[in-house]
Image (tube, rainbow, N blue to C red; front, side, top):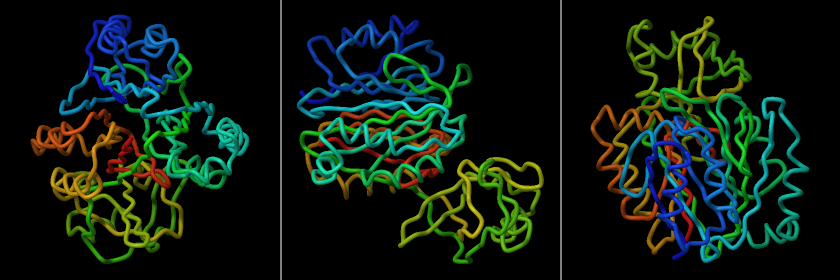
Length: 365
């Protein structure tokens, strides 16, 4: 058995870790990945005590997925032994809002595996995971800088929270705010990455971002006009009603036929805030959300034509909320019940940058 998954609801973190230890008795994880509802206090410390010989990384979550189940107030765990992950290197980058230089961190991580040439020449075996603490709002610049210091693919997501608790990421038995957790996995049988979103181009009209505050994720103008006015014009709705369209009609940056989604958050300070910044000079299309379940089924069936070891789903919180509204959660979970899988509802996804309303999926073969 190379991968085991378990979904646990405990009375507290210690009870959760005790149940995890019992469920994984006799299994020796090289890496333990977990997504814990933010109602749990110090889950990483309890898990480290239960699994002292494992690398353990994780994130807080609004809601959790495991195999064919969806819940909140739980901890979703994937344990990977040496039959699936031969080795792993974990590093934490703190204070990411200060836009740190990542060159030294990646040189260190490459060096752990024998150097950058060893990693890149065996690209099919090595893959990166990244988990952001979302309150830092620094994913865009971090991912851009990460791409300049390594050719290795990193996928992942940003922490979310339930109604109570703090947004955190976890590594080394510690919790971190304003940080990013990086992990490079040396897989035994390789990996695949799947990116799927149910956003399709609504209007072929290209809108040019002419005024924005990238750092604070505020959009002010399209084509030299107030962005809310132009957005309403494209949708054919009254400007005072646009807030109701933010989830169902996100924005899309289209590159080589691939859509990278950006989602509005709220009207603020004469502009509209976003969950992912848009720099001036960017062209976008207004999108519409389609059938999440059907689009996800097609993406999974097209990509996964083999028996896999495990699957990790970084699924946007807005997708979760949309599925709850449309009563699609159960059929969505049935798709992932076909595999050993875990996931959580993220505050943004990582795939060649920071994106929204997307599911980024790491498949361990």
